[in-house]
Image 1 (cartoon, each protein chain N blue to C red):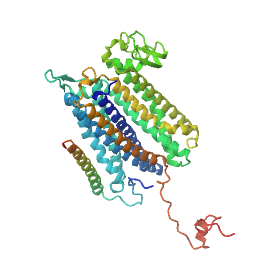
Image 2 (tube, rainbow over the protein chains, first blue to last red):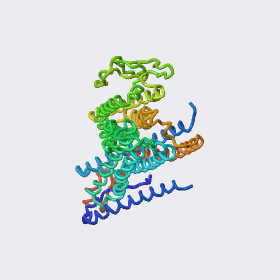
Image 3 (tube, chains in turn red, green):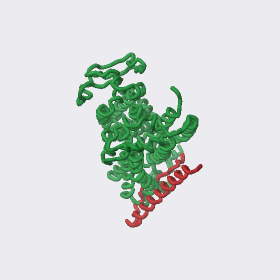
Image 4 (cartoon, chains in turn yellow, green):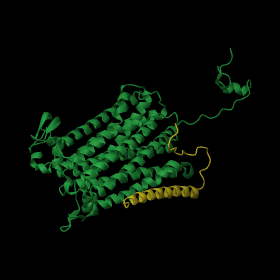
Length: 52
Length: 472
């Protein structure tokens, strides 16, 4: 069965995860993208209050 | 009972919050479980903990999303159905709900993305930080929500504007840490961990009964049974602590919980009975006499019964009385399952199908039953007030018509029935199907030329290449 969400597991190939700055950039990049989606959804929902 | 706008608005809020509380109660515990699994994986490097994490995070993400959707609906009702309450008390509880969104909800929503999609990109340590941030976010979320609700139970640190009748905070510290907050927060957090443990145990039991058990099944059942056995005694203590606070600040609620009609120096513990509100007595009562000095040792003077309060200031007795007993019964059943599960773990039989597993499967609902009935005790027991002793429920209602509320209630019931049934069935399918789908693919074996010395080493003696039996 294919799931709606397929979470990503850890990299176990033995390769290096990359330099710290790159990992931190991904960390904060995903975080900011997530918070932006949440904020946009919240403002859209808030907008419904002004309909009618 | 006439179904007017007030009753329908209360029914609608009760319906929506009963659905909503299922999801936060589950995700608070599940976030902690995920943090523990990932921490154990980092520490021990045992594959089983990573598999548990990747299995349960799918359910966590869905439960989180459904919790958000049902939570948004609830907060809107403050404006649509309870606008007078929002207007009068907004200066006090508005900031508490605002802090919940700013400090907790955003923390959870922000790092959930890293938890789900960032493991390879951010590395193990940063991913673990994200998981812990989400787990901490859920506890901070519960902190602010419990603080706001506890202020409605035991209001403190406020004054009322004589001109407008609006509440305003005089001491914000007292508002946040109002008298009932510490006990209720501990009680709710433990309830969340216990609820999650019961669900995880039930999912594992289902896998064992269906013979789908693998190593993660055994581990999740051990962890869940151990959690129930350890936390349930603490929960009994926390529940009693909460009851002692309620007895001091909301004696009418405790009188309804206990089924005490008459004020007396010493009160019994009523195990069962049918409260008869018209004649102010209990029918077919089974009671242990003289227990109040032990249950409420700090109480001074006579123990108030419901006769100490005017009829219009009493909560509905039967609902509170029975909800409390259902909650306690569900808790005791979970304690029994936890101890039994630990015994089977000790005897190395937790993964052998038996009566325990057949009982643990429906036992997965016990935590939710206890949480919902516990909240019924808290909220119905606070009636007929929204802010206990200060603002009556009938004075908190928005100017809405019966028809408007009836329509929105029907829409809620239909939409919730479809959306949440589909979501819950989907989560249950993932939870119960076992770990076979999640198992890593076995590495491709390189086959040597038949008859070569290396091929003889790789293939079992009784089989030929690729597992075929050699021709006889």
